[in-house]
Amino acid sequence: MKRDDPNHPGNPSVAKQQWQPRSYFETPDEGIEPLTFWETFRSILLGHLGVASAKQREEDFNRANGWHVLAVGILYTAIVTFIMIGVAVYLS
Image (tube, rainbow, N blue to C red; front, side):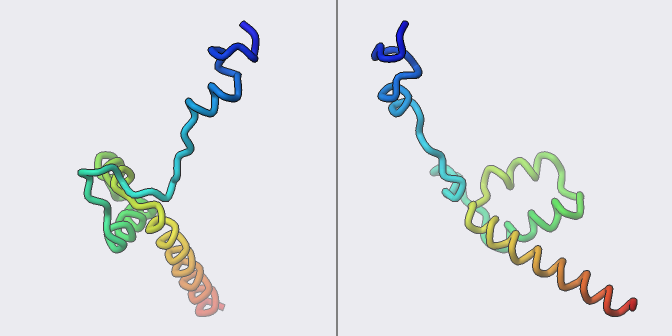
């Protein structure tokens, strides 16, 4: 089978039809209620502390909104950074 054959998976027209880009910032599927911003924050905090169960992590991952995860990640990083700077200044 040659690459220019219409049924060859390497043929650009076939590959273009089969491949669908996935957005990581899309909301969950219909019928699944997405996490709110604060539920996402709670999920990330519990994940960082290591106290969330595997079942809860999986459910949170399936319901999370990508934009909320990005925003919470940036906010959480800033909070942790300022806490660490505060502790370092206090101890020095």
